[in-house]
Image (cartoon, rainbow, N blue to C red):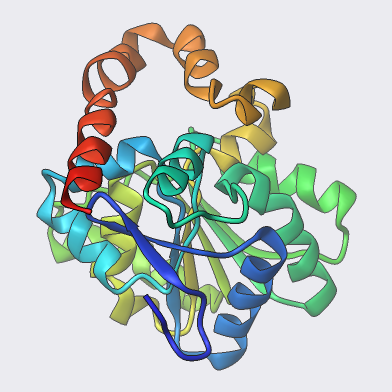
Length: 254
């Protein structure tokens, strides 16, 4: 898909993915900040693609995403099979550090929402130890209910509005972070919301990332499954194998 002045966009399953590398993604995110019209940045992976087949709210959230970055080698392999190759993997956990360095250099205001209890604040402390100029204007580990009433959502949205962030890191996990960011885009105003999953937990140290060789081999899921099999077995062993069927169906259509 050709979009004037924007990255080319392909589809993996029903979800859009932008043909873009890490540096261009950082530039595009900063352009969104400068434009001051808000925006949403998502990092689709295998599980997003599978959930997108069944979840209309997730598809709706992706339908007006500002930037969609391939998170995981399986998406690169699928894009290659579909004859629409992507330049590189741009996962949320790889993006967060260079994005925070850029924010520190350019004086961007950052707000952290989500993560495990205490992760957002601990991530702030660790980031500011290495990036003293980084302006983290708020951290919030409150429980977010994407089906909650306006009264439940209002205090969180009011705290974000009062902090006036340029970048809002939404670390709630999929599909909650994408749906919540999209359905509250008007209240979020000029903030660029980035759904970055476990990135705050990784920085805080409450979760351990897979070794890079496993990530590059497409085996990060196995590392995470080994850490928390009770919670993740259903996702990785029962749900996500549907990805193969989705790509096979897409190949047959082509």
